[in-house]
Length: 408
Image (tube, helix red, strand yellow):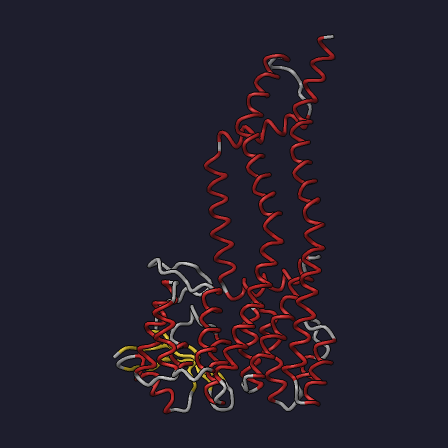
C-alpha cells in the first residue's frame, strides 16, 4: 500500500487535505470520488514537486507556458470538431515537440484510458497544470462545454504570460546595468586601484598623507585582495539565508507585503495582481465554478500571499451571507472599481463579462506603468554607475593633482 497526500474539495466548495492509503493512484482517486470529494492535487506522501523550478533534481524539464497554450488550443479545436478526447490526446502526444509535455501526456493518456476523468488525470501533474487549469477543465467536463472552457484557459494563460514577459523585459535593462556596474567595481578595486596606489606611494613617499577618499578606496581594495574569501563567504551565506527566508511561510508573507509598499514598483505589482485576479476569477465564473472555490483557486493563482489572505477572508464573508462586492469593498488591495464592477455583475448576472473588461483595463495600465518606470530606471541606473566610477576617479585624480602642484 502507498500513502498519498491529497487536496480536494467537496460539493459545497470547501477544501480538504489529508492522506489516504491505496494500491495505486487510480484506486486513491476512486476512493476520493466515493467520498464525494473532487481532487485538486494527489501526490505520493513525502514526495516533493518542482513547482516554480525549471529543473528538478532528476533534470526533468518543466512544461513551458507556450507549449501548454498551444496544446490547450489544439485540444479545444479537436474536441469542438467532435474528435473523441482519448484520440485527441493520443494525436497531440504523438505530435508534441516538447519532451516534457510529451512525457506528461503519455501518463494522462494512460489514466484516461483507465476511465479517469480528464481533470483528475491533469491533477496528477501539478507542475504542468495549475489549480486554475484543473478546476476549469473539471467544470467544463461537468457542464459539457470542455471545448469552450479550453479556449478560455488558453486565452488566460496567454494574458498571464504576456504580463510576466513585459515585467521581466522592463527589469532586464536595469539588472544588466547593475551587473556591469558590480563587475566594473570589483575589477577596478582588485586590479586598477592597487596599481595606482602603488604608484602614488612611490611618487609621494611612504609617509605621504593621501586624501581621505583615496585612503578609503585603497582600504577597500586591500580588504578585497587580502580577505576575498570572507567576502565570498558572506555573499554565499546571504544568498542562502535570503532563499530560506523567502521559502518559509512567514518570510514569504512578509516579503510579499513589503514589495507592495515599494514606491513605483509596488504600484505595478498591485495592478498586475488586480488584473490577474479579474481575469482568473472571470474565467472560473464563466466556466461554472462556484464562487467560493473560484475565490480560493484565484487567490492561489495571483502569486502574492497578501492577496491570497485577502481572498480567504472574502470567502469567509461570502459564506456568512455577504455579496462578494461587499466583502471586497473598502479593502485597500483592491481599487474601488473592483467592488463597483462586481456589484454590477452580481445585479446583471454577467460577472465574468464585467471582470474581463476590468482585466483588459488594468493590463493596459500595467503596460503604461512599465513604460513609465523603464524611462525612470534607466537614467537612474546610469547616474548610479557614473557616480561610482566618478568616486573612484576622484580618489585617484585628487592625489595626482596634489603631486603635480608640489612638483611645480
